[in-house]
Each structure stands twice: as structure tokens, then as C-alpha cells.
Picture 1 (cartoon, rainbow, N blue to C red):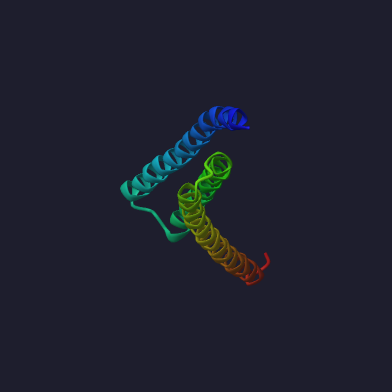
Picture 2 (cartoon, one colour; picture 1 turned 60 degrees about the horizontal axis):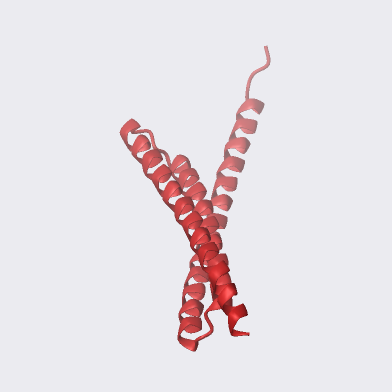
Length: 136
């Protein structure tokens, strides 16, 4: 039984490391992209609220993806570390990541709803303006 656990640890540890690295790459690339896009909007000087929210929404999606990938690594890691200290640490990390994920998802939903309302108002104004045109 002990040998089987050692095999499991030997196989799982590099997989967990690889998954954590993948999450790190996702979050890092998303952060770099956010920084470049934000800097570009700032330099151009025409950053309206919609553009900033759109960039933030995309960034939030990537953060949620990265956190979900990290949570998968935590779940795999919990299979090989059986001490209560290790499990407690993993549980704390999983709870923190889950809460972060929840609040990011909530922010994303609010931004989507705000963007939807803005679009509807714009479309309503365009429809109203076109109905006021004088036929020729």
C-alpha cells in the first residue's frame, strides 16, 4: 500500500506543478494584456467607460479561468497529501480561491448587465431619432 502511495505522489506532483504553471501563464498573460490595453487607452486619451469595462470584463474572465485551473491543481494535490496540516492548508487555499472566483463572477455579471442596459438605451435613442426624421 505504501508503494502505491509513493507511485501516486511521484505521478501527481509533476502534474500539479504543470497545472499550476499553466494557471500562472494564463493569469500573467491576461495581466500583461490588461496593462497594455489600459496603457494604450490612457495614451490615446479616448478611454470611455464602455472600453474600460470591456477590458475589465475580459480580464475578469481570464482570472476566473486561471483560478479554476489552480483549484483543479489543489484538488489533485489533496489526493496525495494526507496530513491534516496539508489538507487544512489546501482547504484554506481552495476556500480563498473559491471566494475570489465567486466575487469575480459577480463583478463580471454586473458589468455585463450594465453593458446590456447601455446598449438598449443607445438602440432606443437611435430608434427614436430615426422615427423623428422627416420623410423626403
